[in-house]
Length: 214
Image (cartoon, rainbow, N blue to C red; front, side):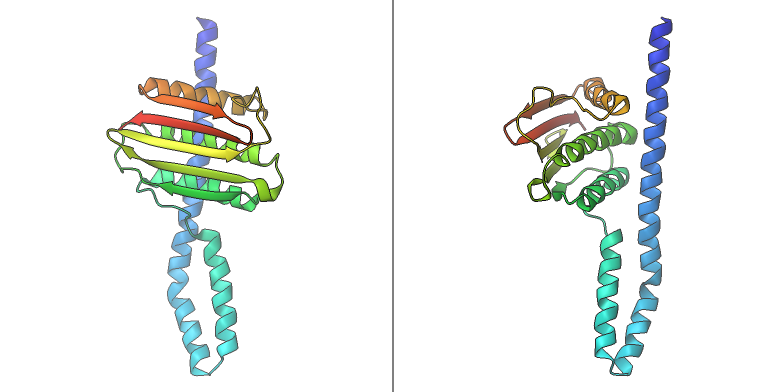
């Protein structure tokens, strides 16, 4: 009994840390986006001044600067679910910074039976492990594909990432105790909602498929 309570306490602490982290990432992302929108009028006014003075080169330089700045805050995908947007775009932005090519498509109803925390734990841990696997490869071989949509009354998630050859231990992370607990929680969450999870390892890729009731 005592051991069971200790495990529950540890899991609760882990989930609280995850939730705090994801909300911090979400707030940071939306703060940057709001800041860019707030400055939009000032950018237009600045370019109007350059245009009035016939300063074409200055306009081009300014547009290049804005393009780079917008790239840093622009969301990669919009699912329709705010917290899913936050964790997906945060992780995919991290992947891009690690020179991992990302192909993503996701559509999620705003209202789901699965809690935001549980969905973020699933998405976050799967992407963490996909990024980890890709980092074992040279940059030109790194690829993550993520696809999410409704299939009937189920939310379907498919994640495929390149990996360094077929591994007997590919279903487990090598990145430490916390990440191992995260993968266990993914399985537990899927089971809790009566969902389905399937993992497969091939010569140069690892895939995970998840079905969760709406």
